[in-house]
Structures are given as C-alpha cells and as structure tokens.
Amino acid sequence: SQQGEEDPQALSIQEGENATMNCSYKTSINNLQWYRQNSGRGLVHLILIRSNEREKHSGRLRVTLDTSKKSSSLLITASRAADTASYFCATDLDDYKLSFGAGTTVTVRA
Amino acid sequence: EAGVAQSPRYKIIEKRQSVAFWCNPISGHATLYWYQQILGQGPKLLIQFQNNGVVDDSQLPKDRFSAERLKGVDSTLKIQPAKLEDSAVYLCASSLEAPLSNSNEQFFGPGTRLTVL
Image 1: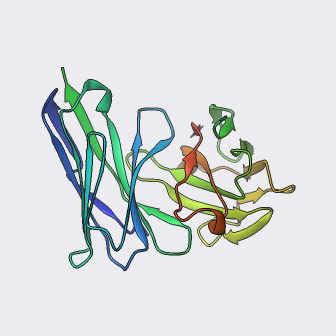
Image 2: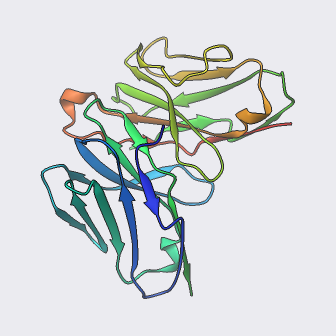
C-alpha cells in the first residue's frame, strides 16, 4: 500500500505564480523525498528532508516537514512552463525502500 | 555520468504472451529497484536487489513475474504470461549501497511502457 498521499491531485497555475502541494503519510519516517516526473519520463529527485529537519530550500523549491502532523509541503516559487510535471512525495521508512504517493499533476500556463 | 538505461522503451503484446525488460543501473550502484507505475498512480515497488541478492520481493506477483540480477549489475524483469492489468510503465532505479549513502536518493531510468491487449 502507498504510504503517502498528495493533495491536490491536480493544480493549474499561471506562469510566475507559486505552486504548493502537500503530502501526508501514516507512519514514522527516516526521511521524505520529493520527485518530479515529466510526461513519458522517469522520476527525477528534487529534494530530501530528514525527520529532524523542518524546512529545506533548493533553488526555487521549499520543502517543509511537520512530523507531529505527519505531513510535508512542496512550494515552487515563480513557476515556469518547464515546471509542468507530476510531483511525488516518497517516504523512506529506514529500510532503504521508498513508498510513493499518487502524485500531484501541475500545469503551468504561459 | 551515464544514467540508468532501460530497454525497450515501448512494448505491445497480447495477453498470455511473455515479455522481458532490461535495466543497466548507474555504475557503482549496488542497489537496484524495479517499480510498476500504473497510469495515474505513483510507482509501486516490485523488487529490490542489493548486488545480486534479493532484499525485498514481497510485492512481486511471483506466479507470473520474475526478476534476476545475476552478476550484480544488469537486471531483467520478466512477465509470463501477461495479463491486461499488467499494462503499466516499468521503472528501474538504482542507488548507492546504504553505508556509502546517508540517504536513499534513487536514480530512475526512462521506463518501459507496456501495453497488454
């Protein structure tokens, strides 16, 4: 079964706007990762946040983690057309296996 | 650095036929994963190898799916016989062995899109 659930399932924004998506999970984690998947491609690792971290930045990406609520959020600032993709959160349960959610599909309109 | 290679990229077969997928991980990556991604869903782990040994195959439908990684490098995933519900993208990923990596960042190949008619 999938550990994480992303919300919303789909998101459509104008270029330049920010996009926020959330991930909720069920059990304690070692770390949480976010991946991007462009149409017809494999997944690309974006960012990893450990269970003892609360916030992390990478370029235009900002990830937060609230272990008390078992949730994480991914913020993409100043979105571009190239950000159009599906975004997945993946939880690492300390056994070097990842459990992926169903993803959020983001469409950035020019 | 070359990425994870997979072939074929696309495959169309009739139900009850057999099919095999091939994966070549990133050089030096001891851990290899096969995932099944059904349209509209996230990847689901089928099997995890550490070198040429199986770490986890609890989600692999062993009555029809098999996988091997004989020399600890390349891997093949086979479906025999295929069912309609096997239509999906099969993704291969690799990562460094746990002691060498303080995270489990996985590197994915482009996937093989399987259509079973």
